[in-house]
Image 1 (cartoon, helix red, strand yellow):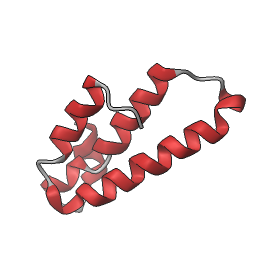
Image 2 (spheres, rainbow, N blue to C red):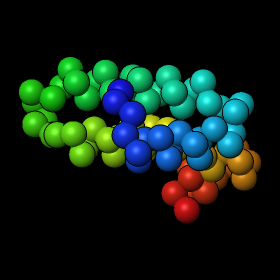
Image 3 (cartoon, one colour):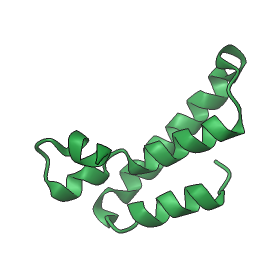
Length: 76
C-alpha cells in the first residue's frame, strides 16, 4: 500500500486506538492485496485503491464507543 497523505491521515486517526492498530493494518494489507489481484476484473484505479485503504484503516473506529452497534458508530 502506497502511503499517500489521505492514507497517512487515516492511519493517524486509527493510531489513536492502538489496541486495534495491528488488526486494521492487517485488514488494509489484505484489502490492498485483493484489490491488486482483482484489478483486471474491476478496472478501478489509484483513487479507489486509496479510498479502500482508508476504509480498511477506519472500519472499526466505532469500537471506541463499545462493541454493541460499533458499525453504526464507525459510520458516524
